[in-house]
Length: 133
Image 1 (cartoon, helix red, strand yellow):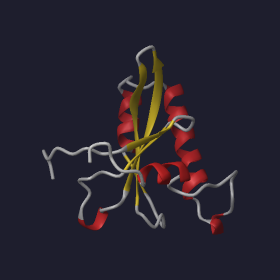
Image 2 (cartoon, one colour):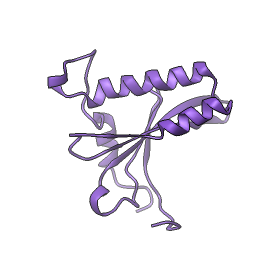
Image 3 (tube, one colour):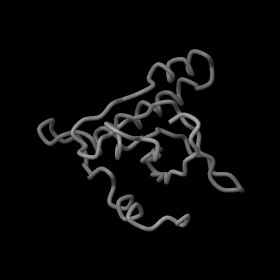
Image 4 (cartoon, helix red, strand yellow):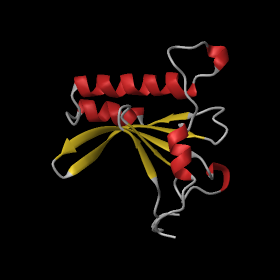
């Protein structure tokens, strides 16, 4: 898989600091899984700049579980001064909000509004043909 060029669709949830991608390189046991990046979105005159803020999720199509990734990278970034404590707090808040909003199961009890994963707007966009086809 390494070194193979791919084109993936990514979807930004601007108000949530989240980027969703279903990588084309995911095969076998993880084919069809979502890779979710927690991101910081910077608005510039040229458009949007997306900064990865280290915390990621792997989510299978059934959304019956998830893997939380790279908390060690988040800790290293704070320790090395690449992220401020305030930025780290925002990342942790966004992580918890994403879990509460999209990944908590009904039997765990609600914490605020819950939504389907992936969001309906993303599902609609995903069904459209690629402009590369």
